[in-house]
Every structure is written in structure tokens, then in C-alpha cells.
Length: 257
Image (cartoon, rainbow, N blue to C red; front, top):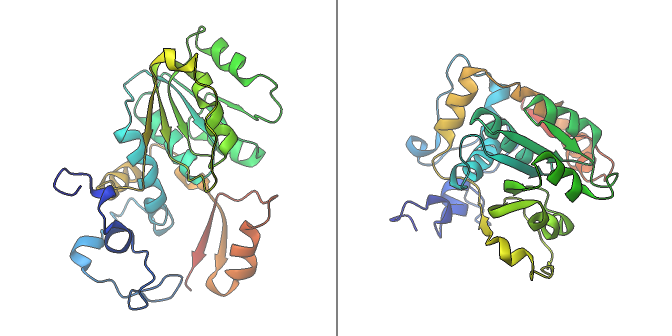
């Protein structure tokens, strides 16, 4: 995979690039100090134009950018993003920056929907309140459908509906992680569209590109930071809060101070 340039698909990517492993010798996180092995490969200098707060968003934004880069997106394409969590919001921001002709998003949380609009979504629909979302999408695309659907939701039902929104030879980008078995809906008519299904996993060489994007300051990307907490409050105001189904957070910034 590495010889072909597919760095995100490296068999050692989890521990070498992303830093996730069960090996107790690897450095941890959420600490005041962290030892970085091979710093020449893993440390990036932030320019003066990029704050530490924005720097904390580089990693999730790299995942969003990777999905857009490996997709079939072209300037002026009409697109759709399912789910406006951190990754979905990043996808919206990069699609806007890349010149998307139309960005339709879905999100059930009102606060996240508002941020999606600020980052570039032209329309944001709550799928729980729209009885026939497919008609809405077709109406906005002159009956053709969108060129790409970026599924960032991690929700099986959203993935199952993705083909309904596609134009002929459109593409589904599976970005969100679905941890359940997903029955594929009957594809007798959808197959006639000759659609593509492409998965996207984390990132490869996107960190410098994201930092350059942030340095331009062209997008209100800091809107993604919805709370700031101390390291000592990470359990109650961080993890436990995010486990509540009714939470409205996007990214909770943890300060080591």
C-alpha cells in the first residue's frame, strides 16, 4: 500500500501514523506532556496565523480533507453530506473551499445544523422532520441528483438511503464508521445509475495541507469548537457528556493547563 502511495492503508498505519495501539510503551494522550517518537515525521510547526485552538482541529480536519481529495469531486459539482459532526463539518468546509456548486447537508441537531450553514452548506435538512428527503434533493438538482454523497453519519439508515440521492454515475463516499451490520437495500433500479462506492479511512499526507488551509483564515472553522474544559474535568464534562444522546457538542477542546 505504501509503495503505491496509499499511506492511509498501510498495515502499520494505526500505530505508526495515527498513534493508536494497545502497546503500553507508546505515548498516551490527554496529558500535560507527551513523548513523541520520530518527531521529524510527526511534528508540524504551526505558522503564526494558526492558533493552538485551530491546531487542535488539524487531525479531524485531515480526515475530512482526505475524503474530499480521494473522491471524484470536481469544481462545480452538486454534493451532499450526511451528518454534520466534526468530520462532516470539515467535509462541508473543504467542499465549499474547492468550489462546490451546491452543498446539501443533513443533521438532526440544530446547533450543528447552524454551524454547517456557517461553514458553507447551502441547505441543511433534518431527516427526522422531512418525510421525503429524496424529493427535496431532486428538486434542488433539477431532478438529476447529486454527484457525490459523503456519508459521515455512522448511521446505517443514512447509508442505506445514499443511493437515492445520486445522479447517474454518482459516487457514495463512506467516511463515517458504522459498527453494525448493514443490509444493502434492493438495488435493482439503483444499479442502473452505475454508481460508485468509495470508502475513506483517516488521512495520509493531509496535515500540511490542512495547516495551510487554516493559515488562510478563509473559513470560520473555529465554530467547530463548542466547549473548552480543563484536563481535570475531562471525565465529567468531556467523555460522560459526549455519551449523552442529547448533547449538542461538536469538538470539546481540552486544555492541559
